[in-house]
Length: 331
Image (cartoon, rainbow, N blue to C red; front, side):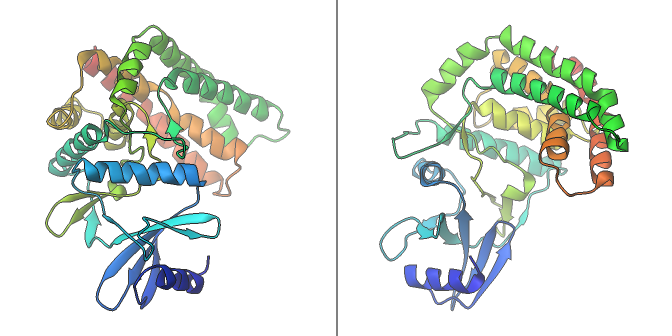
């Protein structure tokens, strides 16, 4: 939808006189006569959109602080329809993105994540929702991704001309598939299923994209969580493991940083000893190696050979640091 039509839709659905609209990442910043708003447009089917909206409202009912308050439209609804898309309006948050390289901020972010997971419990599904479901899925997902990496291998062998990236990827493919299979085996031998039984009973969800740019620090120094587009029904260990990866990848793996995250997380939610093995295996899986393969061989993204070479080299350079950390920290 173009800006002019979006402006008309907003003005017809909300008591707002739109002065300006500016696209900021995957939202729009909206200036009116006396306030500034954000309008978030989501391209999912209604059931999936409704799940995301309901998850946000559940956190608000549980007094989670902070996420932007969804503003009602003229019909007292939480959203509007824009063609085949849906949108909701919130107040704009004057803020900056959080800094995961700052240990003080990282500790506060980890505590905030624990608060989110605690407040997410007791979420009630209904038949109108079409959520992403991650419970019980890790073993199957990782098995599938190992098979997909085998497909990349076949595609490389079928090429008459192999690129520099092909050779780098192929040289490391067998070892990364083997690493993925080891993760699957470890999860199969763990108490993963029993732990998922407990997670389902808690009925909580994950943000699923707890990146620094989705945690905004406002003018009062408070942390605001935005962008629930990837929200998923899964164990809290999914978000927590991802936060550990985001904070330490690129040669920054350390016992001190892991302790900082886990200790602060545990101020607002629990992590039990039996759950640490699952975190270890989630981190160990060659997710980036698989993802780059998907982007290069299946999606054929037009980002250029050098982009992919640089990305895969960064991953490969980090493997030794990550493995050393995993063996020392979790054993």
